[in-house]
Image 1: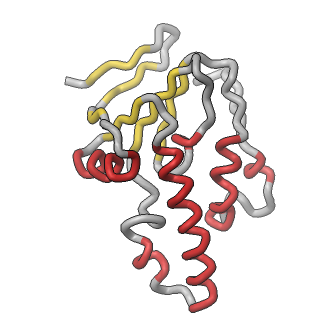
Image 2: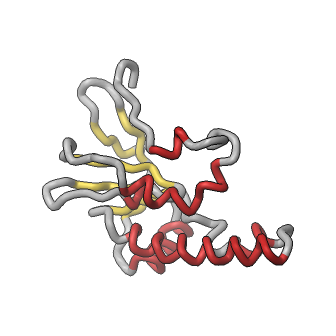
Length: 151
């Protein structure tokens, strides 16, 4: 994107955020919702966690490409928590419950969800109760940007 400005959330400025970003998981939904995208007609989010949850207006089109759901909050929670002690695991379960609740709400925000596999599409249909578009795309970032389906 060359000379384009990059805008980050308040989490970027938090202590140790670069290395210990996992500790900021409870704040990630808030950080995502605080992004001001009001100046854009089209929002394309590339999501493995929270970016599908950005807030948009009625005159904006939001397309979210879902790479994977938040696996550590959903189907792999027990694997991720297995090495934690009782207190840390209980705290993590509480946070992950909040993340799952928010994730269901966030999955219904984009106008279109696109996934790259049948597995992810089935998972997202279960979360959002809506149709999912499945496809593999290459995106041109030239001055004449467009979304081009691969053959």
